[in-house]
Every structure is written in structure tokens, then in C-alpha cells.
Image (tube, rainbow, N blue to C red; front, side):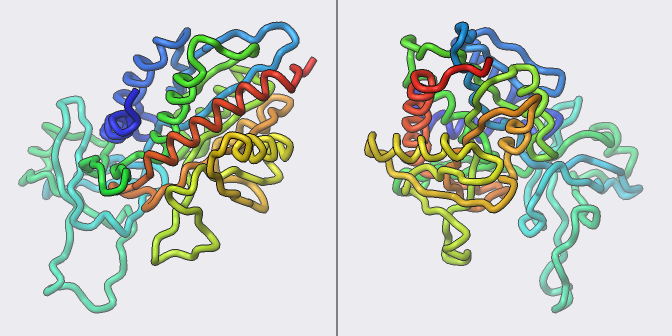
Length: 346
């Protein structure tokens, strides 16, 4: 599997929280080659790679497949659409952006309205989501309603592309790049799977609260979990202390929610295998699916690996191919080590 092509493909797919049809269909197709696949009632794709042998750990690998977006809430008499947010949409990038409304009639192109600078006031602020309008070209509510209805979801239009130096840019790489990491990990493990249970989950609804991972973890009932998500990569307009760096390898999480022994194991394995890595220290919750998985049922020992990503929750999220591949290498080594050293909870 070519990492660049997988990233570009996953980025192009549509799948906002609660409506993951296109992304889920592709994920199901990819994972069905590796094990028995089911889609949960909340839209998570769960693939049983190997059932846990007696007395062995059962490891769950999780990355969320949903993306941020918007939903049509109302159609004005003028034919303009009003919307609400699905997840943490960055409203700073909305004005004048091209969008797609995903409807029963197929995709409908639109643009977010923007007041020309000649007519705007000096102290105009960024509009909130419920203050913006989307123009699909309709001249009336009646005309718009022939194509669009309240409840249809809307995504920003994006053209995934490769930049210089092995950087891939596009929408939804948070966390579709994490899905690619898991697919690459399973490819590295190959047919010679370690002697443990192994389940891959591409979870839904992370951007709206983590319900997909929480319910999937309850269903899978793992002894251990590794969550793959994105974290902030440094750009000149950000604080270096708050960010990792592109091309410096995966960010290994340390948090009260996470199992410290597993975090240290990841560091040791990275050093042993010559894989570059960075530490990401959080004083409380991680803000990822790890928070929900770790507290599922009686508790799950959980680790977090994050790929550095620029421009989160925009149509131009950017990751380094090297970081994605190094994260997969580390995760594969981690699964093998965990299978050998850690017995299953009785």
C-alpha cells in the first residue's frame, strides 16, 4: 500500500460525524481483506483481525474516521442556507469558502457568503457558524428546497495534494491519516500475527464527543488499546512549546488517563528501532478517543500515538509521509512487544 495514495484517497472521502457513509464504505472495503468486519449502530468500522487466545492480551487499535463539517438548519426565503456546526469547524476559514451540500439528490455546490472588503467595517469580526449564509445559486426557498433540505450535511471543498518534501495536504487528515497508520501497521505485521487478540477500529463521532470509540470499546472489550490521532505541528505563527514538529516522528502521549508503562514502552521501542519520536505531555485528559476507551467497562490500559499535523480542522491539514510511516513502524513493534510481555487480565 502506497502511503501517499492512501492519504490522498482517505482525505478526499466524505464522512462528517454521524453521517460517515462514503468514508465508512471505503474503510469497510479495506479492512474486510484483513478480518471479519462489522459496522456498529453508531457507524464505527470494527475489524476482528485475530480472536484473543486464552490468557493472552486483546489489543484494540483505534483511529477516528469522521471529520468536522456543517449541517443545514434552515432555508431562507431568498434561497440561502443557514447551517450549524458538526464538530469544531474553524470558522476563521469559512467566509468565501467553496462548500458541498450532500443531499439525497447528490452533491450540490455552494459558497459561503462574504462581504466585499469595500463594504465591510474595520471592526468586523469573524462570524459564528449560525451567522453565516451559504449561496447555492438558488433564487428562492422553493428552488433551493428542490435540492436541499434541513438535515443535509455540508463539507468544505478541498483538493488533496502533495506538497514539497513529502508533505500531503487536504481535509480530514485528522484523523484519516490515523486510519492510514493502522492499515500500514497491519501490513507490517502481515500474516505472521503476534500471539494475541487484535482488533482494528475506525471509530465514528470523535469530533462530536467520542461516542463511536466508547461504544466500540465496550463491544470489543480489549485488555489494551492504542489510539492513533493527530496533534499540533509547529508553524511560525504558533507557540513552539505547544507543538511537535513535522518529520520528527510520532508524538508519544503522557497523561493521567494513559498507562505510563505503555507510554514508556513506546519510547523504549522507538529508541531500540531507531524511530524518531517526540513526547507530548498532557496534565489531564488527552482530548482524544483515549479518554473514552481507557474508561470503558472496568478500564482499559491505553496508549496514545499522535502524528504531527499542521492547520487542524481546515481544508489544508498537512502531514509528513515519513511521520505516518514511522508511526506505523512503532505501532507494529508495540503490538509485537505487548503480545509477548503482558498477560491478559483474568
